[in-house]
Image 1 (cartoon, rainbow, N blue to C red):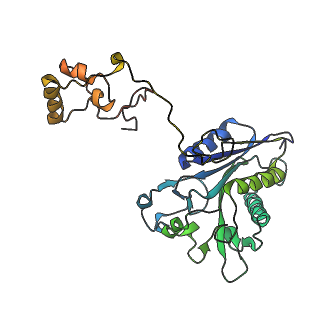
Image 2 (image 1 turned 180 degrees about the vertical axis):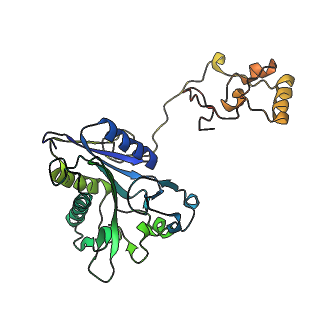
Length: 321
């Protein structure tokens, strides 16, 4: 491992799981630098390589969550708002020159980072729980409970996936599964343990410890905007109310679309409904529909209501057919 490889830390805000997974693959495939991607996910249940759906106790769609099967290790895990997810994309050395990276040693280094962050925040009774992965509160006591899940993948000495630290998520999502396939012990969060910390504070601590623990060269950190900061230019976000709408002049007559639903328009519209036909005119919400249809002209979509071209000016549905 070179000693001058940059270590780039990115706080990405809230990102859908599949988008973050695609970003991981892109970074690993096209960048020689080390990265730590920090983010929150929209509500999602993920299944590791050896997971089965028997540990999913209720349909995710009932609570607006996705279900994604992924290529990490581990069983079923929940990610959602209020949970800090970290994806270290690192080059890892083996024990000897040219040897493969040690996955056990790497997982322990991730656990060390999370344990240190929890202790920085004042949660002292935290550590490893023999026989179970992740980071646990009261691991040697009467009520061990998991505060951080870890699931990684190593390929050609490059790491992917990572950890999920519960800061202040909606814990009811965890009741709809058997977390990590472990039914004997519960799940907790920093908030449930009496630790009052914002996501930004936790991100700062993780970034500091990660830079100390993993960086082999210069460290660079970039964040997306944090909501509510004074530098946010939106008055509403700063708590100053909705503000006054800017004055808008009335459009000139030549810019206004005249609503002309004459006999030919009505005849054509009835024909479309009767034959169950799909038109570009309606799907794209074309403002010229009245002119065309009154002339007896319409443009059909022969393959249904979706189009794969995704033109920026068009409102036609562009999802996969």
